[in-house]
Length: 75
Image (cartoon, helix red, strand yellow):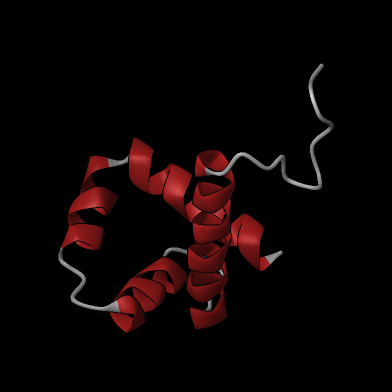
């Protein structure tokens, strides 16, 4: 559920200029999490850490010659 909350929060930030301004004023992850929670998103520090790790893994697969294990190889 928390990964979903992060996705929902990011979609809201993309769509709402006032929220985007509030996010840009955040100085650190703690402020960002507090802002998300104040808008009803159940975001936690681990969500941001997990997303960062997932993004690094995804970028690695994009630049490697290996197919990720969760994708079927193309012929």
